[in-house]
View: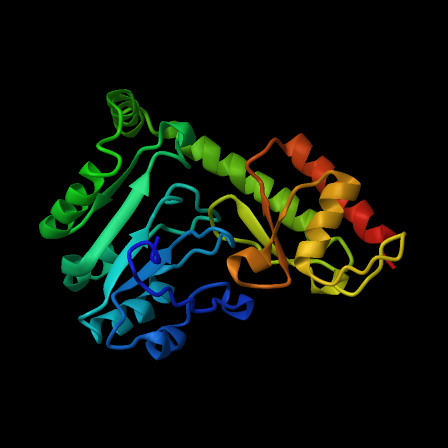
Length: 270
């Protein structure tokens, strides 16, 4: 999207030792006079990392020192956050940044309405007006059916969100505990979303039964898919290796089966 807009995307690595969260010092070092936006996703895809107020404050302090940088806060996993961690968003915490903050959200994740293709944003009036000009010449508008469905989702009973959050947290724990029991894999327990981002460094360099070398996270993903029928995504696709991303938006039975297959696949490596 940045390239389409004739921008140059700059990726700032969010390291595992920092909980896969953006370090304020790394952000400060990456900002130049040509920087226009910071795109921040919490809870995030692919790691599931989320920011508490204490962890988000240093990021906002950096932005306050650079008034030419605007912020896109991607809150799409707002309702999928676990262990009692309160959800926070930048425009809520720092009113002084509201004039250059675009908060984006949608009904795809928490409300399981992916196919309805409806998202929304809140921000300064002049920015929203400019966005409308672009959208009106590209996708025209969301369908009336999607709009009606989203109104029903957002204004109707919300108690099911708690049930869904509890179910997802249980699935998260099944996957994290299962992966951490596998020799060669370590998995941080994410705060939100429905992904785990597991470190597979302990399996890199091992050999399959036919003598092939698992020389990267992508090779491990191919091995899991082709030999054990488990589909995961290499962390290198997201700019960080060697990791694998696994979505736990599936039934507990399927997740337990998948973890069993990954365990068996790891044990076959030498």
